[in-house]
Figure 1: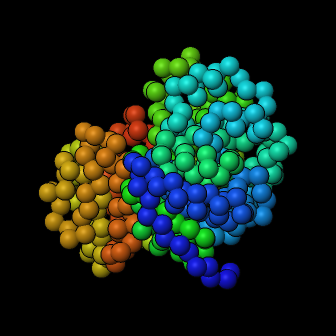
Figure 2: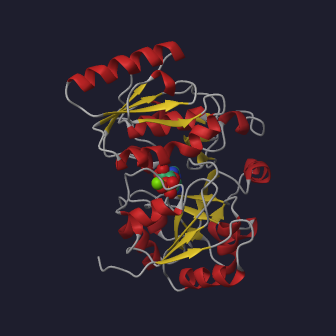
Length: 350
Ligand code: AMP
Ligand code: MG
């Protein structure tokens, strides 16, 4: 691919400068690519109605062709062109969670290019809760397709330096709008069938959804790592979020985690490997390893969500051969944290 001259544009997250937003919007309107912050992770945006523009996203990321993209909108009126048969429950969900980290799967219209949906009859849509993202969509006057702005397979980007690392020279503009808040991708909820089904756990938890919906299911493919189960969300089958080093997860009570992590670290070191430990505020002082990083505070799982991808990328800057990562309890946002950790570890759990 020919090297592009990627413009890095700093924009204020609280008061996005209009002239800078307009410049980025012109790139989108002209069929170009702009990486921008959302409240979940940074997205790599292009005009969702333009096949050629969308193609540039797949190329820059090295994204598998059958992995569909989420379309981002800034007003509910934009849905009219894009989706059909909106179920009643969609309005309840949009009212409560938009703008926010909830992606809804609707039946699509034929205005949506096949490149967006990987040929599916449904389309994924969300309204991000970030001023820069909302202003950019509004001023481009278009729905913007935006997967995470990373090289496919790598941890998702939670600040502009991650995006610069992965995509500089491959896209037209990178907006630097500070760190993202949630730090994990949106929850993907399929509402095109009878029972709302979570295809990917994320920023909005099942507990949150149950305040609005009488019932919610998880797609079986989230729980089971089995090649014979085909996930409804095509992206879920790919290797994801992977640091360079091998990673393993240790689960159990806090005592068990500390004991097992210490034991495994010793074992790997005796084999001559450089060991990294992903610890928490509650446990890090128990470990002697030089490459021990604190991912967050177990009493506030949001801190772990916000910092997880950043810490995985920090391990890439060290020369560790293996990362031993402490698991967290799978409730609330912990469900999404463990989903990302399991994928990063390729399912290796103690
Ligand atoms: P990313 O944009 O990298 O956060 O990934 C988007 C996620 O949404 C992937 O896991 C996709 O498989 C999923 N997705 C997008 N469109 C659809 C759809 N129409 N049906 C099911 N899953 C979808
Ligand atoms: Mg992604």
